[in-house]
Length: 97
Image (cartoon, rainbow, N blue to C red; front, side, top):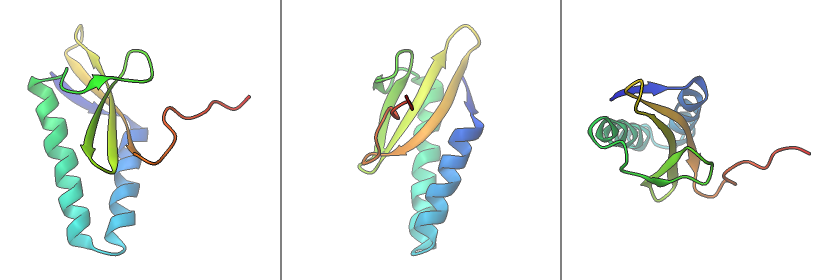
């Protein structure tokens, strides 16, 4: 499997890093490394996470504070990283009515 980060997921990752780095750059680097290590595990084990709340997705709790949302595309041999979400945030987001 090949990993593909969506633009939104890359932005999530950057914002998390920036938020943590404002107080502790070393903690930000450790958290980012944890994200990277977890995603690399999906290359060989794409079904590692549980079935997601959004149909067709999977979710993996990377850290007690962060959830990784991804989609497996076996036909193309890709794992799409869709979002990194703080566990206190509403997921999936409520659609505006």
